[in-house]
Image (tube, rainbow, N blue to C red):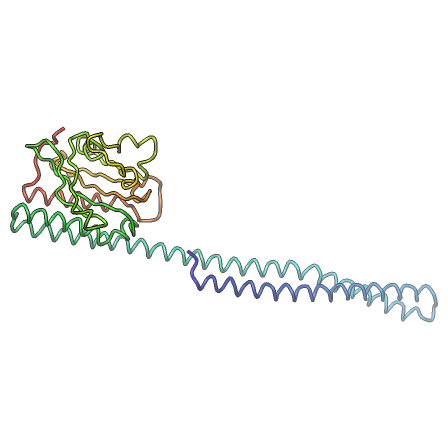
Length: 316
């Protein structure tokens, strides 16, 4: 985005350009007048030389002066336009370089802000983990810690993911060995009313939650409506909701692992496409919407292990 200062410079350059072009046209007119006058003088001088021997000196002077004026006028005419164009081009070039430098500084500032936020979120989560090492706590205490971990992501969701005023969701599912299901242990949503609603239970292999758990791999889609990925994100009939395709438009599911095997899932969703995507193309920008979730998944897995909520079986 071009800054107000650069925009102001471009407006000033546009004004200077108009004045410079007006001056160039004025000088071009004078050059034309000089060439015309020189041509007339040369013609008169040539006529005097051939007409009368007594006027030969005057005729020669007029001829030479006319030729000189033609030369000066021609030089001015050939110099003014290229010089004007070169001056304007140089001015535009200087402003373009300033604009590019400012954009680079802005991008670096954005990268620094994103990296600093990543560090702040990690520090906040590590404090929760450290508290758990002192006392694993009861079921309610443990779930409150999971909520605190998700809260760190929610607090910085705009910087980390670009999430604003939309229907977003962050959740932690853990595998219940006795029931053989993935159960939501903590959830943060865009609305307290939505957070309080019952959460679906997933069997291993069901939907993107069950698939991520069973395979132990990240499942990320910038748009779950794409034909090539839609079946993976479709819930089975008994768990399907009418607004699933609208509410969960962009999804990232990451396995929580212990000793290389999944025991739960960290899920992030948004109803806005491309909130989450796999960063594959080389880019100078630091922004990566999945990287904060990878770091969070590692810390949530550590917390679950400390709180004895992690099991050693993948369940699939």
